[in-house]
Length: 318
Image 1: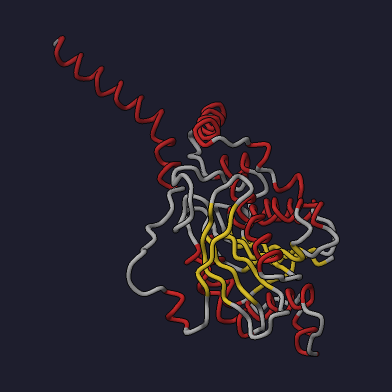
Image 2: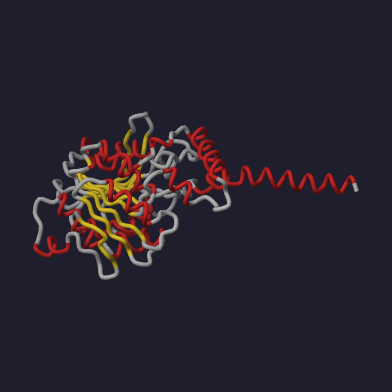
C-alpha cells in the first residue's frame, strides 16, 4: 500500500511539474526559428529575379543577413518585409514578384538568431530586439543603397515590430501591418489556455522576460502607434483570427493617427492573412504603397488605393 501511495505521489508531482513548466517549454518551441538551409538552391533564385546576398550591422553590433532584390530603377522606393514569430526571410518570398513588377526594391532579411543572421536562436523578444533589427535594415537601405522612400510590410509579430520601429524611425514612410497584436500582455492572454489563471500567465511571461532579456512595456505597439502619423498605416486583419483578434486591430486603429486604414478579411484565420490575404490583396496593397511612396500614379492605381477586394470590408478609413 505504501508503495502504491509513493507511485501515486510521484505521478502527481510529475504532473504538477509538467503543468508548471509545460507552457514555458511551449513558448520556447513556438518561437524557435525554422531550419535555414545553407546548401542547395536559393529559393529566391526560383523566381528568376536578380538579387544580392547582403549583410548589415545592428546598433548592438550583431550582423544580420538577407536578400536585396533591386528594382529596374535606382531611384525606386523600397519595401522591407518583417517576418512573424518563428519565421525568417524566406517567409516573404510570396510577395516579392508582385512588388518587384510594381517597381519596388525589396529587402528580405532574418532577425537576429534566425536564418544566417548572428544572435541567439532562443532569444526572440516579440518585437523589442526585432524592431532594432528592422531599424538596421532601414538604415542599410537608406545609407548603403541610398534609397529615400521606404515602406515596411510585416506579419503578426513582424507587423507589431514594424509599428514599434516606425514610431521612432522617420525613415519609414509607410507601414502595412498584417495581423499585428496590440500588446504582448494581450497576445499572451489570448494564446494561453483558458484554464490558466492570470497569476500564472503573468509568471510565465516574467520567466520569458528574464530568460530573453526584454521588458513587456517595450512591446506595446498600442502605446506608440500614434507616433507614426502623419505617415500612413494600413492594418490588415483576419475576421476569424483567434491568435490575434479583431478587437486588437480595432484598438490599434483607434489609437493610430491619420492617415490610417483598417481592412478586415472575411473568414480569414491568422495563417490565411499571411498565406492568402497578402497575395489576394496585392493590387490594393500596392496601390496603398504607391500612394504613400511613389511620386506618380496612374488613374487605375489611384482608384484602387484604399479599396479592398470583394471579399473584404473596410471597417474605417480616415
